[in-house]
Image (cartoon, rainbow, N blue to C red; front, side, top):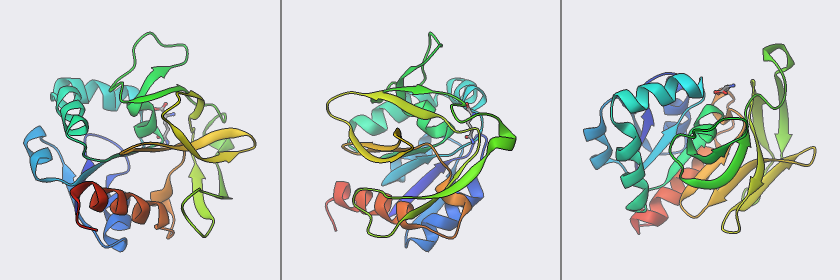
Length: 193
Ligand code: GLN
């Protein structure tokens, strides 16, 4: 599977390393034309307002929407989850409007309140190690969204068909199980698993 990591801003190299550990070929994506050769795309953590602005500037909004429309899997982590959401609490505008959910930004407090924890994720046998850095959470999801994990009662991982979103940074640990889960989604979508 060839998986791209959107490389406008944020934690790109770490995702590439985790995707490779999960057995995929991984590339940094800087131009919309590169989407054509991918089986899946990761939207990394960083700062969602900044990444959103750059996505608009370089025509990634429509390009990723049509990538998703073709059934290609997209995985958003932290800021990437915010980019995927249809609704952002307290903001008039969202970005990609792909996943039927409302997200709250910086829901766990400030940078110094960052933490790491083990999460039970539906579909993954072992606990998943997650790093939460100024993380968002998922406030509410539509009917077609499957909640995969919660932390203290709040939704932190969710899936809607070929779309996957996590509040935390799975790429900052040696645990690449969530990346392996996404690579499997890409293989299923490509019909060759
Ligand atoms: N707080 C950031 C935002 O709102 C996300 C933080 C992250 O990606 N680590 O975009």
